[in-house]
Image (cartoon, rainbow, N blue to C red):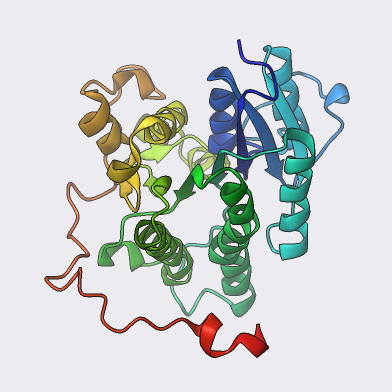
Length: 315
């Protein structure tokens, strides 16, 4: 087994419970040193029972880090408020202080509010933009110098959807941020490609069906029958691990679903092991296929403009 310093280092932002917790645990099982980052903290030594319900408020970055270390893995809990760029920068600085490098960034933090525009107050909208696209952008900005120090070798995984219009229905305020995150995936991928950073890839992933999480727990609490349409978060972490292992040209700029990626790139056809209810066949909530975002003139870059050269004094 690799020593701590030889291990690859993964920073998982939004790892205190649910899907993020599973991602952190499975990265550690695959010989990564994992930084478990989120806002929620606790004294893990006082947690009883342990481990806690992974979708409850008792699950924090500290209990997740304890789960990993007690299983023989390497993990460090670092508190972060993704609404604050200063807090995000401190998180990355602490990561480098402890591990001297960064190989993988997974951004799973998210705020959810599904309602019409009329029923989505400005405070809700602003909170989602702060945590979702702004938190992602800040995390990437803080991590890019570390990827540069690593010879521009690294992976970024973003929890955001493929872009299609049905996604906007009934949750426009939420969709504006999540689609913005997917635009960042596409745009940064283009930066990597045209700047010759062939060791870097950014990829977005989204669930094809409902996933057991703190959010879906609110739904199943009202109607337990909904549990049959859920999968374990293991499918999500398995897909992320597969994306990280896949060659850069295949995944850079890709917006994909967990099930679809595992089927196309790993040859998996039977997903029954991921069903939360044994024997159930969770309903797919995402489209079977998506329209391409590319146009005929995709490779025509036109006249390049670089604002850093035009407005140096104002940076």
